[in-house]
Image 1 (tube, each protein chain N blue to C red):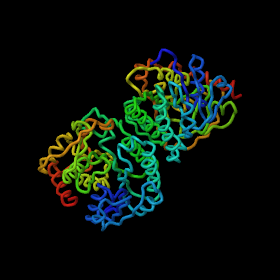
Image 2: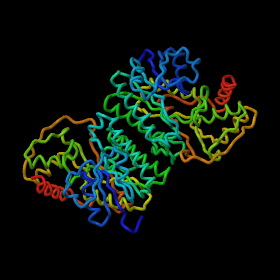
Image 3: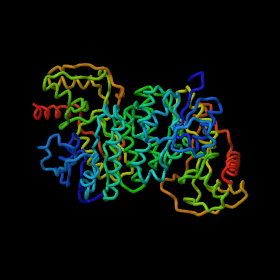
Image 4: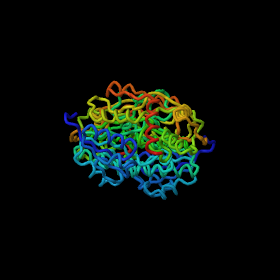
Length: 310
Length: 310
């Protein structure tokens, strides 16, 4: 796309994936700015240009992206469970400000928007496992519907105004800088509770299968998505492999050498039984593959948690 | 669904399709109420319980649906061209009030919501013509995206709360009670201008192909959709046949025995070149088929226009 490294602004740059992405972009010589409500780990972003603001504050968001080549849109202001309880709030906090953002991107001459969509919710109860990007998109949670709507608006802005974009449908990311907030990030939650010797609530019977992808692999994909010149614009980003929650629990107990104190709760209607995505399109088009094996990723995550949270 | 005829409230009941539907439901013995901003033809709805209100006024809409079995949601507060110019307004006027409506429907014990979606915009530039319901949904206009989002929320309300629904993806309806407002309804516009001997603006070169369906056939589908007990919930409702705008112009000129005064304008980016839907699912599941041939439908439409507009 450009020979010089593109300048990047990361909306949601203080969050889990955002912190990892900003550090990588900065280390590899990009001009980087992070924008968001808060930094989970301010010390680890101390070298990054930081603008504090709310994504629903259109003026603040638009000011933050001015003069940047690539806009990473990693914000989702609501969590899956909360979105189902307040669908209008979910639309107002995510879809509406994204429309304002896209309109400003085209006016500001942004070269590309890279959006983090949801590989785990956008397909709903998929008939095909692993699920390719061409599968029907029938979310069974409001969070997935607003992600889907934003994907469609991205395509529309390209059609109407030539604003380029890439969508990464990321599955269940885990790794350093993930904290267990508001029921997202089961691996982070399990490790943190194990370290603190606290009980953990688990929804369902542990049989749900998820596609856990290490955050460094997600960052690899975000970086290549900014520079990709292929014709595809929507990519699944996952490990391509399913692991049940019981497997995850067993692996964490094994690596940490202790038993987790589990409290089983009834399953939630927004949880699909199986979510595993096919990642061959990203391999073929972006040259991206998930490089980190699960045991290795888990080891690094536990090491980070021990060093940071203990 | 019920042995007694279900009581029906028609949101958007004063509009083109709504007027036709209310008259049919009333004539066949249903308890009917119409709700909307205005009645295009108040005299023709004089026997129908009418409540004037704006769909974005949640309290008014919710009050109107109380105690009805079936809610027909025929409202779309924005026209395709306007929606592209104000996508946030389109979301605020259509998606957000629909979410409030659905929440009230489940609380009020509504048995079914029947929603008029858009067969002409929801698929975008379809690879498969005629386009089946299973085709990818990639709208190239904001109007199509909000229709799609509403379809997804309907499925979600059923999943979470058991609220039943049917979606009819209606193509280009034409017939009595259609008036040429804000660039919708090309057949109505052509006939009205011909009667008034006024010039007509045509976007593009007349090669665009559309699936025109007679409104009485649409009403047939809306009526059976309220009672259907099958497993499918999304149906294309069209003629299943494509006609170019040039063909339409020629047919009108032939039937009216006069030449139209056409003013050709550049094509619009929201117009897909071809839109024709496959209607076999509706035939198999609903037992619905489009009964009215194009020449017959056009004849009735012209007769109505002559009697009403002259």
